Length: 399
Image (cartoon, rainbow, N blue to C red):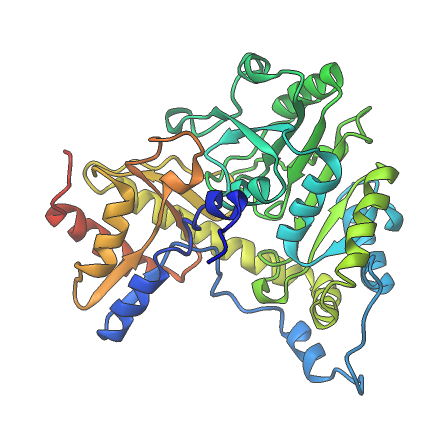
């Protein structure tokens, strides 16, 4: 039998999805599973976007432009300008989700063996994208004790070498919920200028920033327009994960031109997805205000309730709808599987993502999980109660 490639062997299983077979078995037993493992909101997609699908009047669904539909790109450009970002329609390329935007960016910005620096923990799939494109991730640690703030610039400089070609951040951060300050971004700007690096900024959760914090985009940093690539998606903003519509935004014309070549090879982003996305961008302010307040309420309840469980610690996220939670356990992979395979409370259990999958440094995150507060308050209350009881009976408890 032919051998799998080295790349195929190295690709990790998704920390977010690898336990799905166990959750399916739990459900087959009749158990209710509360999904805190994945950022799949239970909030409804904007009704007018759903209505646009119902009234889709094409007699066939054709290929679209490889750049993305012109009408959607124009609306997206206006959306960015309304947020005080100087973006032209020709600086936007529509992708099949934010995932494709990242993969395309890696392919055109980096050669095989080039290195990018990413503060860890980081979104688990970044590692898969890097392996798939033969890019090497150089992680530098951030810490739960200080809320996962940006590591000191001296830590970045320790790992910079001739192969270093970029820095990658997620702001607001998945999985930690941290929001980088303007001062932190200015420090990165200076580093990017000093070493002439790319700065790739995943800003999918920019609408969800709490407690009076302000989201500053990497696109706002002066003097590094040709170094910055912004990754965006409407999946979480409009609770439309399944339509798979993202975007790459950059003032670097060579980057956009090169990504367009890849976009041509994959033909076009999903036509129906763009129809939904274009309608969703027209959502009234009331929709976003309601969604924002809902996530804020969920965050306030959920994080406070977790911190009331003996031995549990979770810093309060500043943005997005995720948190890294430290638990009194021996191994988060074992614990999360045990929760699905062996534990139940009132015929209910909880699915979480082992945080070890959000670190590329081996052995780190073994007593942490990533959780997503994307469920309604009643479900979150049940999930917290399940977790509280589970931690009293888990055989690998450490405290």
